[in-house]
Length: 340
Image (cartoon, rainbow, N blue to C red; front, side):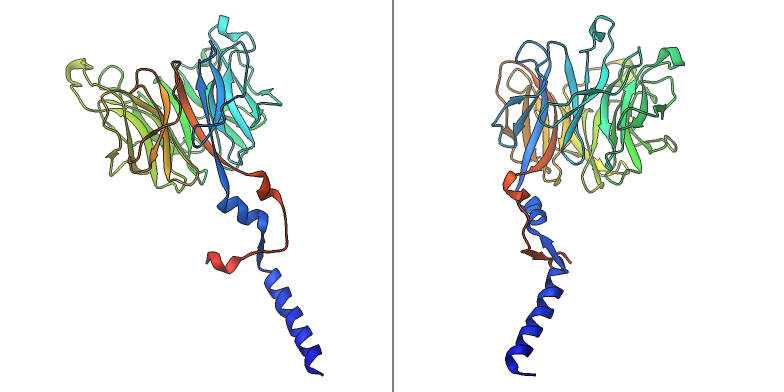
């Protein structure tokens, strides 16, 4: 075998070996060129609508643009859809909302729930297959709002919690085995909410916070190790009094230990949500008089205001989408071995 032929064969074998362990550039761009998108609710056009901004607060878009109330947005794990609650079916006259889903661009709106008592606060499971929500189905025997779950297309609705308390704001753990929620089932004084966690089938419910204050709006960190929540836990809670000041943002371990206070403002910080990479937390605050959307590092530093409008902006939720340039596919990429 001559040298040139040997070199050609050797190069071909090496190339095949390399390409069998290469990640396409599409995947590479998905990791290094993500675009943060923040959906939130605002009444800046007279009624509650769902808007989206980029991670720097720019490029504001109204996704719903509907005369009725739209709220409770939650991104699907793949960032392609947003589930939300709305009164657009005429339920506002009856005090009931329904769960809807739409594309990330606000198109292709579909209704998922039809029960007469209403439903709200939806949350996607991490595999995109299920949605939990809160509903007070008194005709079915509920004594207060309970946590329900359904398939992502609205089928197979069933109840996860069954208690005389008020159960709200469900949030799935990243691996999909647990669900956190807020409840007043261990009420010591008026308006005493705690953060609870249960298995995805509704079993093994545990109180994580067990504090006489108000612990609300739990959200899991992307790695499942921490839970962020809003709380009023500084003040006098004894004797049924409720002189407790304002909401701040806290985090804790997934087992309820190692609670850390992230914000210390004289106004309210509420409705926190993690960025998908776990590096940022977005929240709503009225520190400038009305509620706006803010972002901070996951340790509470570098707080930045993202929206600034005389109306109220709240209920932020975050996803990452890949820029259009990242959708090109090529044979070149980086070796999987580099991840190890």
